[in-house]
Image (cartoon, rainbow, N blue to C red; front, side, top):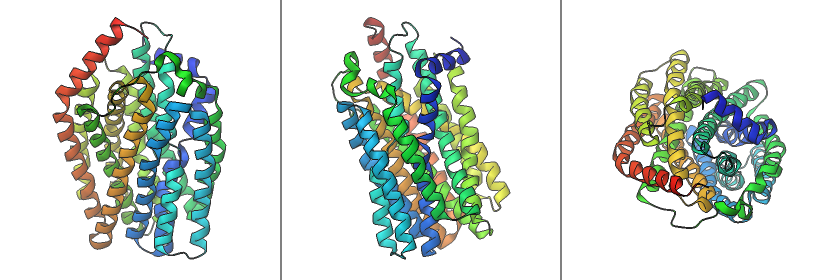
Length: 412
């Protein structure tokens, strides 16, 4: 089955409307993180405070999303995502209101955390729906699942491209407050649309034959959590370093747009991963992309202009999506079917924690030493990512082989 045919089949199974709302529904999360950083930094005059608030939002989301994923595994996604979309939007509006009321940095950080706790993780929830959607595709389900996860990885990266870019445009045209209010509005419309889409009926108890129980944590899955933590560190430190460099250059509104360049190469590489032959296992794909990330990140230590930063960030993106696609694909196979929602949100939560640590640490370093110190965090994250990929090769290969043999013996 060709890559193009795989994508066409997925579009037919899910429907164009689902693809649209599942993509637009994930934009508010990517907008809220950098939007919070810019909003709080603007009000307090400190990158550290902005990074702390954005990090608090990300950490709270990392804590709240697995709880939502576990609940959705039990009762279905519809009611869970619907409530999250409405309350999360209200949290973003409250954050903007408090900045206009000259609230302290501490109050803003707590409010950002409350908003983050409520924001839905649409991307991980969308991944859960693909296996039941493809369950009747006998003989080609795993190929379609690989295509689905390639698409989802590209969609996540595209959301983290368009979200920050939209924030940047709104900040340049209006203000950080206006940008955050737009994010809240998008969450109400498209988060709720994703929640009530008919595919939500395929989750929770309605999953029927897909339900199965068993242990969640394993050596492989713990390694995957570490891998996503590194990607979060990369995201958070790049956002903060970019904000510091563009602000020093007198163009703070370009921060979101420059960061969006990370998603351009990432989207292209993510969509292309479905063309890789099946014998190139997901554990090998993680290793290859990790080996690419390190040399692509190193030039960040020498960039000193917005133009140079755009080039480096654009190229770095080519390693990000393939790495994440491999990690999430292994994660989906590493857990019992009834716990995929929890697994996907845990991996996304690990990314959020990494983002929080990365943005906070990079913010402190940027305040003290400038953007180069912030980007040193990015380079360090790629080093650890490569070490994790090397260490996890054998155990991940054994697990994937065992799962493939079990599926062949008793197909769903």
